[in-house]
Length: 497
Image (cartoon, rainbow, N blue to C red; front, side, top):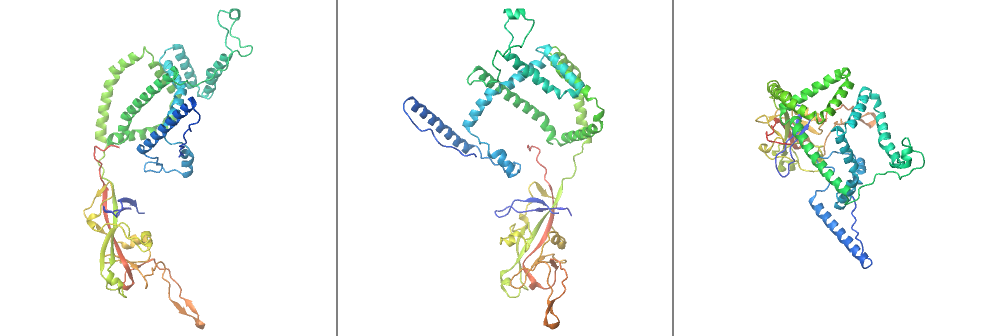
């Protein structure tokens, strides 16, 4: 018998969805600018008030269209309240005014990033070969002696930031003057002659501002194209839409990880990075690109087709995916209740049991719904019991669990009487007055010497009892367990994540 059970419920208004279970702020400010004064000042105040009203109206409209934030939704990770408060509660929600304000400030200051991008493109496209060769020389020194790497940021900071900033404050005299003709070279003697250089954001509606907007627009397009290309190449290989191909990639990656773990210390990483870096930079030279394209089309592309054909044949022949689907065991409890006429009699014996429903819970005397006074939930008929979502029946019929004692002990159910033979019902045990009897049954008191009362020595008793022919000790409910196997339902081939 499998170690997994399921809470299987029928579709209905009062039944929960099937589940497979293992057995073992921001405060808004609506203050408007008062109309104070007259003339030009009053006109500006009216314009500001009208603009603020339009912004608030647009915000209200967007609040109706955009769903509210839900940090505890089905797809959101569960985080601690402290982390949620510190990371998200203090940040403002979406707002058109804030969005416009932040975009203008961001666009005015993003120019340094685009300048660095343009310099990198010029460097690796060999626009000035001396700069590219200087970069390759530094890269070669770092590859051959990696201990120079911690000094590289400090050297770059000195040569690229501090020296130009010092030269800006102590500029050389202009050419053609008497001092420049008599001087041998640059001299930094004397007080600073120019103000310190600083980085200022671009003014709005200026040429630099619109240039940043153009570069930002193109960068967003480049990111979108790169993202779509990566998704097109990697996602079909790794998301198991083609299980054979993804399994092959998984096998190769695991083998490569094991091989690198064992052999990474013998690989000449310095020479490898040195040769790889030179190859990448040299391949960007305008004279080398056409040669590489021609060689790729002549020699590499035909071999790519043969390699792909070999890989497809290897996957089709050696990757086996016809394993049996996963199977689990689900359970349902058949509940029956003693009829009202028999229950009202002084003696509970001889009553008739009425079929009640099929429930995922045994509805034992100490279950939470029973203590709370709730009614059992489930399906009225056996045919209405459905498999869990994503599963289908593996067997045609339900099977009665003949080991009632095992599932009672496994759930630590108390106050019940177990039938070990026959129909395997598990009955409630009640005393007179419908008081629940659970746990160890106390032994009767005995009279001792001198008229005192002594308790007989107590022996631990189980919290359940085997069935006896004493129906007056049975409560109003009884139940028995039915089991059935389910298997995973195959997803349709056209399903997408």
